[in-house]
Length: 272
Image (cartoon, rainbow, N blue to C red; front, top):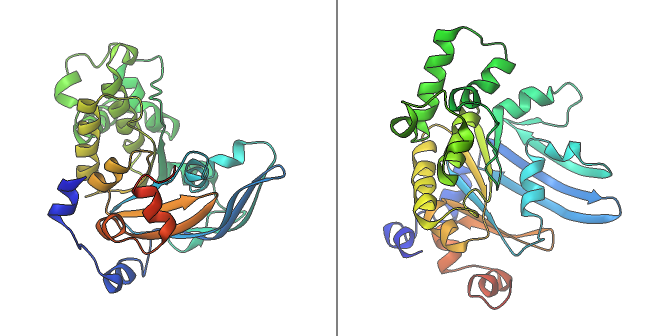
């Protein structure tokens, strides 16, 4: 935790936070969600700054992953879900009837908790999304695959075995492959749902380092149960509890001097 705070103990004051959030790339507005009769999210409002890493933290069952999946409408796939409120992407509602959901998911990619490479070659895993969207020329695909693997920090490790099965990779490599697959279609936002929870410390460090490189090009929103990871890796942090957004702010400020007692209690280990 200390490296982030020592490097940037007071990265932004309140005015700086307002400035960076004047035109957020994504914004939830009074968002509520029910699974049947059970309410999972309660009047969530949250603005996500562009080309930054924003972390969602909070105890298990607080709604972090549910909120994350709202941003690219993955909850549409769950029976019995009802949503009120809105989410805006570049100022436009993602729930507009004219929105192409597949196009939205191309712009807002997803990396899941458990790496999920397809039972295909490394090359075909990365090329998969491009093929779906109509790119089939071999040279173009080769360029995209190489570029994506380079950005995901994998190229040097796999360039000589691109046509071998992705299932033979280590867990950390598989997770970086899933990131390469997500960025191959050139999204603007990458959603990461506890991407390091199944990885060892060395693989976790590589993913965190990769995230710092990716934010030069992409906006990252990460769910993590690991508060040290949030402190190390994110620029902004939102603390959630029982389906509500309790506090949101610059990561160093929130961890050093939270404004809400619930946040302080969670960070200090008094509950959660």
